[in-house]
Amino acid sequence: MYEKMKILWLSHNIPYPPKGGVLQRNYNLVKEIAKYNKIFLVAFNQKALLPTDADIKDALNALKKYCEEIEVIPLPSEETKWGKKRLLAKSIFTKKPYTVNWNQSNEMKKLVEKVTCSFNPDLIHYDTVGLAEYYNPSYNGPQVLNHHNIESAMMLRRYQKEKNILKRLYFYQEAKKIEQYEMKYCGLFYANLTVSEDDGVILKRLLPEIKIEIISNGVDTAYFCPTKAKTQKISLIFGGGMGWYPNRDAMLWFADEIWPLIKKEYPDVKITVIGRKPPDKLIKLSKDDSNFIVTGYVDDVRPYFEDALIYVCPIRDGGGTRLKILDALSMGKPIVATTIAVEGIKVIPNKHVLIADTPEQFAAQIVKLIEDKDLREMLSVEGRKLMEDNYDWSIIGKKLNNIYKMAYISTRK
Image (cartoon, rainbow, N blue to C red; front, side):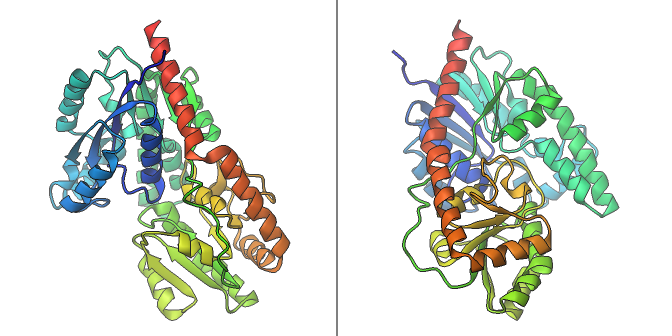
């Protein structure tokens, strides 16, 4: 009879609240895995996400429903005023990339060793490649490494798109450092978990012999569920924290190149842009144009989704898969997105989403959806069905648990 395993889960953030991106993935995977296993969470706290002791306390109280025990320590770079800037400058002259230096901590190393001895886990889960250096060669159980995206490929893509010579040089240098780091550490793990087959192929090019398992991003289809609320007549929406470069770039591109084209066809069109840290340029535009609405962070995006006719995702950079696309599909929203925005998601163009990669194409697809109610309804129904059948977190959690079980059994033979 299979008994609950003890999972030591190492994280570069406290996975709560589950509002977008990495936090959404981590929280839901922990929640699902806790149905089958006992979890000891060891995490760094990122002040940008949980700045106060009260925030941390609320997060830990929420996570205690799923974790047997939790240990949290601060990121070293956040303990002094200029820590992050010093670390960034230092990383230019080190062999290790910034994403690794950022997660380095003697305190974390000692804590992982201590918990491994006291908790005696059956498996150790490392939630990002920046934590791979805590790999324990003396531990005799399986260790798995999760990739939210392939960091070297994402940095290389940013290098290719950057026009500033100094920034290009920095991004290229970082891409090569991360690639060397991935080649050094990824092969040590029982399995590398990627969010898509595309990411698995990229990692296999670096290390052909490694074991890849696909654990896709998902969506809570009960939470992100369409209702019969009336949408505004001609209204668009985008959601995503703009502290993350690909989201910021996407909406600046949209504002500069796409928005004017749509306005020519439909002067009364509205868009609501949701997400932390909107750039000054978007805030200024919202003051000059009352139909370009910038909300900043909101606690619950669903009412905004319901009000909108179409979800737009003009992302041109980044990696992994976009949870914002999954949320929108689950909400039954017709979507216009770039090819990059839907990478790794099993959507069929013109069945689940409309694809556009130039400003002219993007504006034309939006206008097409505004004018074609039947097309909107078809995309809505098919997108929702795709999420229910393939991307609900309960389905993904079962798959991850099966990988854990096979890893445990294989190392006990």
